[in-house]
Amino acid sequence: MAAHIRRRLRKGATTTAVAAAAVAALAASQAPAATLAEGPAGGGDPKAAGEDTASTDGAATGNSPYYTDLPPLVTPNKPGSSSSLPAAGSAEAGIPATVLAAYKQAEQTVATTDPGCRLPWQLLAAIGKVESGHARGGRVDANGTASPPILGPALNGQGFALIKDTDGGAYDSDAVHDRAVGPMQFIPSTWASWGQDANGDGRKDPNNIHDAALAAGRYLCANDRDLAIAADLDRAVLSYNRSNEYLRTVRSWFSYYQRGTHEIPDGTGTLPTSPSTPSPSTSPSPLPGTGSGPSTTPSPKPSPDKPGGKPSPGPSKPGDGSTSPTPKPPTSKPTPAETFGSLENAGTGPLRATAGQTFDERVTVLARNALGAPLGKVPVTFTVTGSTGTVFAGGKKTVTVRTGSDGTATAPELRAGEKAGEFTVTAVAGTGRPRTLTYAATVTARQADAIARTDEKALVAAPGQKFADAVTVKATYQDAAAAGVTVTATMVKDPLGLFDNDKGPYFKDAAGKPLRTLTTLTTDAEGVLRLPEIFADDTEGTFRLRLTTEGGASVTIELTVRAPEETAPEETAPEETAPEATATPEA
Image (cartoon, rainbow, N blue to C red):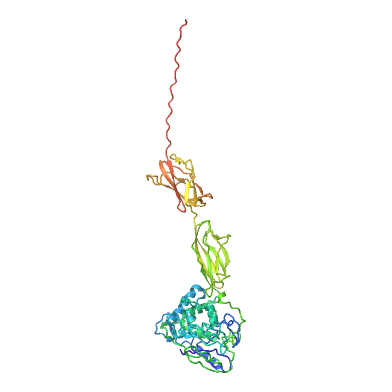
């Protein structure tokens, strides 16, 4: 591939005309003006050209060269058009199939793990176009790996930053200096922190477009950026390559691809054709297969877009009279391993418990960093929302727990309230754009697996009278007293089915009217329930009273209504009469 590599324009008398031409070309492209950040995003200590910047530069590409081709004047379609336009559109609007799929897959993955970032795949396409011409026009194998590998020039301090070898040549085949690698041009030290395995082959390969696109997406989303905000998008692009000219070029392609693009076969993409003016120093090593690069040997000068050089001219603030952005002091940038990335469920099972009981399951979450590894010391706030009366152990509805070294945080035990129903537990972590997980939970009514009378007395009443003996039962659950269990009492048919429950024994409501079903009965602390008084109407017979508990336990009790037996009067025995005395004549 005849790749044309751009080295950073340097300020000086010899390059003023070149810089002016670049600006003019941008204006001619009719690309929308970029809203530039006021300095390099993410901080980082500026370094002079030739100084080792392996760990302090902070740019994904090490500020290595890039292509400066601008989009054509005619956009592929009107704004808001479909991203599935026919292949008859502009050749520049076509993106190789595998490469386009990788950009879109990365957008979907990041939308799941970091939805607040709002990463657009068109931004990945713009960077991929500028960095490698979409993997040299889609020259990738069936797995999406660039063949041959895409390598930038050695970052040896001669016209570029000096970045000594950090990977032993594992990624860039250079054991002396680092080189930018792959379709998205990551330097090895950045790839070591941000590399991804997006295609599930067990390898994090910077030359694989799927892995590289996802890594670029996560990198752009770092530091809680929302890429739907212009300033955050500018900072993200500048963190990739600290050059305002780079930002303008990426912005131009981003806007172009937003207006429409289409899929083309792999290997048929349009390659970059416009070379940039090389820095006046020793020529860089050419990309594989590109032939010899331009060679000049004037004395090195500071690069305007390299660490240590003066910033490229950019839009001045309105009214401040300046002609360049005011540099900001260096700031500390957290590493990907320290950056909060996502919050996930760590295997929490169904949350169900009986009223008044403790939930067997506890809510557990897992925090990951921007690389997808477990992240410790992340504060996670758990909150109970609902009207069941459920609280965490200790009586609180909100608690905060920090993740451990394994990235997990477990909420305290949940204690169910007395009211049956559903509620939610939310887990929230992160600042700026917090991540939230919501768990549904249920409190069921107290239950009993058995209910029985506490005595065996026969329950008998005369017609129109009340039963003299009260009905008392006890509910148990697993042989223990079942307190607070709801019991339903219903008068049912007599054993022979001669009468419905509109006849026979009944309870009374508050107005004294007959009531044959009660649903508001509850066992006491000992699981005991004493039923209200029961009355008999004029219908004689044997009837049934059925008691049913939450949990399905039931007992049936017989009620007998009969008139009292009549007792026959006792017979009185006749009185015995003493025999009359017979007078005996005197002798």
